[in-house]
Image 1: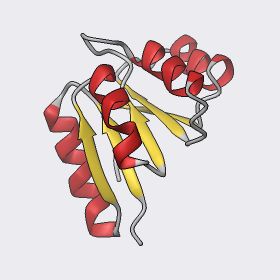
Image 2: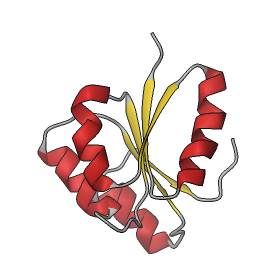
Image 3: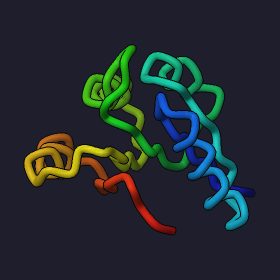
Image 4: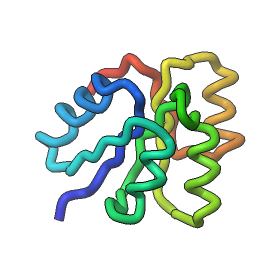
Length: 108
């Protein structure tokens, strides 16, 4: 059974890039164009991990992260963001307790 990854990003190119990297490795990749869409599909997708962008127009990644955790969903959440300041990384890892913080642009 393939591991399911949910990529939450308002940039379709990022979802496409992550999908093109992970699917050949045997992962099943789902995309959500924002926080609200992510919350809608979480129950049906049941991902093994979430890659979550921070800067999104409808519901930012911080709010989305809190709502996922409020629903008691125990899934690894990796922040994937263009915000590369140490402060942002510290917020993601130490305040939210994200599993990891990946800066865009990333390599495989």
